[in-house]
Image (cartoon, rainbow, N blue to C red; front, side, top):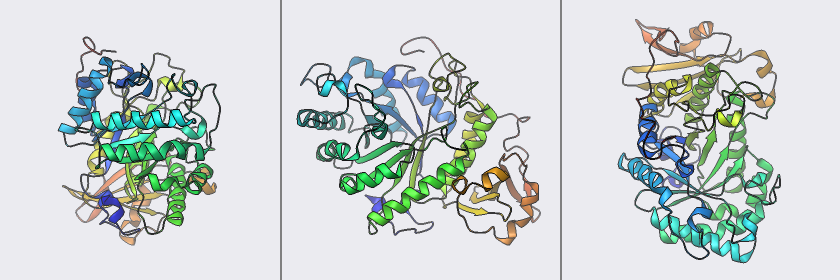
Length: 433
């Protein structure tokens, strides 16, 4: 793995963060037939995303015991994966969940189920080899996701017993494959310690987390990054001579009315802050936003309102902002993060227009919470004047130099200015929602 050749904490030169390799991805639901390939690829292109993440469900692929095939309903999924690869992108495929022929369709624990899961993993890696190199093992095992009957937690050592033969099978079928695992709901450090103790890292090329903040004391993205920093420290302690990339394969903020919901403006604000902070970590290889399209019609259900676009494909504020954030993420240099004495953040980088700086403030409640922010070096003196221009509500502001002084970019996240819009998407025909 290229990322393993990086020196620990090497700034700027780590291949995981080299131009064109950081993955700004988005989660799609083509396996659930909630859109078609044309729609998904057009939206991903417009949003500036360079990867899609979708499922290849075991139950659909081995619907008949010992007979593995990609079902006809996966035609749109295959087309999208091929289309993403043709763009030079690396799509990610999730290998989940259980199969009714083994262990009651729940978590994989018996020898027969473990062997069958490995066979399924090898089959998918072989079938998708022309277009996919990244495969994720299960999804949120730590919370018992996919268990029957449902449980709220599942042991890491059981996961490793399933992981080991599946990883070997994938690499045998696809030597260039990247096996990604852990896939925890939240940044579950206790569960990761158990995975490490069970020898799980030996079977992984990278680890992944779903660093949602919905159930935390505060929903701010800086707290999510702080948790990922702790996971990074745990991995370095476990294997100090190996660079293990971390992928955030799900994160997002729903825009429903009621429990867990945030405003569309806040969702856009959080996307900006999380993505820029993630891009300052050379060991975060990518982030996949959850998700592309709203999943249902209920405006009060959080699960139905994670989308960056609505069911009619009209863009929310976060989608429009993603197009501009993507341009900053593609910078050839590693972005830098700093902290102002009063608690604000500053991210610096450069693009085709020259040097830029993005700043935002943190409120007093977050500053008083140990896990609500990250540790960064102090802002260099040449950026000191920016602090006075940061709005108190935490909304990020982009600054560029003009006549030797830092000035706010009047078009950045300005609701009064025209923003990039999603393409016109047809809503009829094959695979339409």
